[in-house]
Length: 316
Image (cartoon, rainbow, N blue to C red; front, side, top):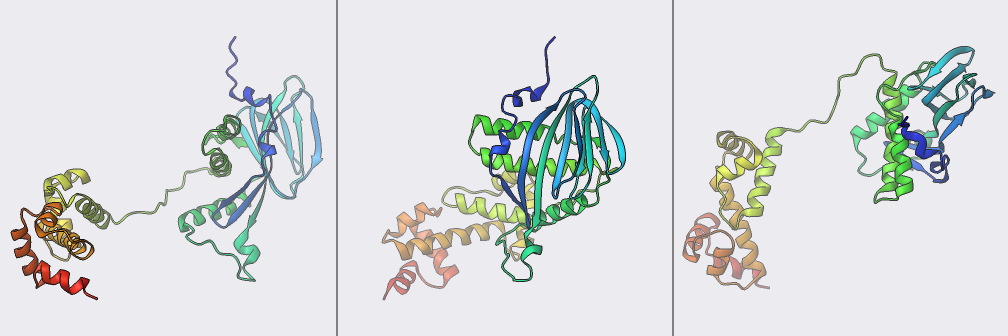
C-alpha cells in the first residue's frame, strides 16, 4: 500500500523551521515565530494542562485524539485545527489506539503602532493601507475566535509543507516564501472560523484613467515608429471607438493624433536641446516623415522654428 501522507518528509528534520530566526512584518504588526514544527504524539501520549503568553496554532494532519480548552473537552481528528491564545489553559492527548500528528505554529504578535504610538517613533514609509487593514482585521479576529476546533477548510496546513520545502531546497526567495507561508497560515486559520464568507473588499482601479495611462505609455514607447489607433486599442483589448472616447475624455478633449503629435514633439524638443543632430535625422528618429514636415508642424505648434528653439534653449 502506497503511503500518500505528504508530511512524511518533515519527519527527518521536524524542527528545521524552528532553527530559523523569523520575524514577519505584516501591516503594522511584528510576528515573531517561536515554534514552527511537525510532531507526532504516540498513542496514549498526554500533554498536561499548560498555557502560553502567545498564540499557538495546532493542526492535525493525521490521527486522532482530544483537546481540553479551559474546561471544555473536544475530539480531534484528521483535518482539524484549533487555536490557543494567550493565557488559554489547554490539555492534549493522542488516542489510546492511534498516534496523532500535529503541525504547530507558535507566534508572538506585537502591534508596533500601538507599542510606540506614545513616542511617535513608529512609521512605515510607503506602507500599503490595504495590507495594513487586512492585517489589523486578521489580528482583531484572532482575539475573538471561539475556543473550539474546526476543520481546516481553507487549507492552511499545506503552507507548513511549503515553508519546510523552501527551507530544505534553498531555492531563490526561500526566506520571503517562508514568511509569506506564516501569513497564509494565520489568514486561513482565521478564515476557517468564519461561518459565512465575507464579501471581498479589494482596491479598485479607475479603468478609464488606467486605460488612458496604458495608451499613453504605449504611444510614448512606440512614437518613433508607426502608431495607429487600432493597434493601441488592440493592445488594451478594447474597441477603437471606446479608446477614442477615453482619450477625448481623459485627454482634455484632444484627439488621438493630436496627443501622439505632442508626444513626438516633446521628444523632438529633447533632441534639439541635448544633441546636435540635423533636422532630417531628428524627424526620422521621432516619427515625422521629413525634416521639412517637422519644421512646419513645429513652427505651428511651438510658435518658433526648431533652430530658434535649439538656439534659445542651448545658449548660456
